[in-house]
Image 1: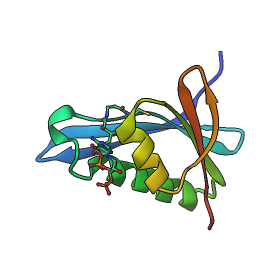
Image 2: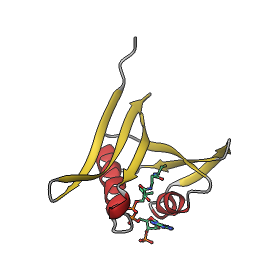
Image 3: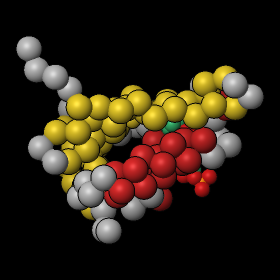
Image 4: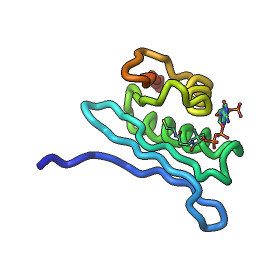
Length: 104
Ligand SMILES: CC(C)(COP(=O)(O)OP(=O)(O)OC[C@H]1O[C@@H](n2cnc3c(N)ncnc32)[C@H](O)[C@@H]1OP(=O)(O)O)[C@@H](O)C(=O)NCCC(=O)NCCS
């Protein structure tokens, strides 16, 4: 049985958890899984805040790149990742594959 090196990043508002993402570390790089902001809290910058925190956290850990996948028809997610500087590096089974190179 293997052990997963991962961290949950979450955001609270008035004590309530309103969004989170999972950072998984493997082979010296990081992947983002399960980014989600609760529906009533979307469109207020929380998703961007979570991602910026994850990027900064990876930069501080010396991680050179972050990878993630999102459905091609997920307009909000695709726009978010593009605006954060992620490069679209591949497409498979209806998903876009993005990579962000982190410069220290
Ligand atoms: C994707 C998601 C996390 C974005 O979170 P959010 O808090 O609503 O996003 P933000 O308010 O931080 O917006 C950040 C950027 O996302 C994009 N965006 C957000 N909502 C959007 C929408 N409805 N349509 C198009 N672009 C959108 C914009 O580029 C926005 O930047 P801008 O405000 O400078 O234009 C959220 O919509 C969500 O939880 N969706 C359901 C789960 C999901 O699809 N997760 C991604 C799986 S890979």
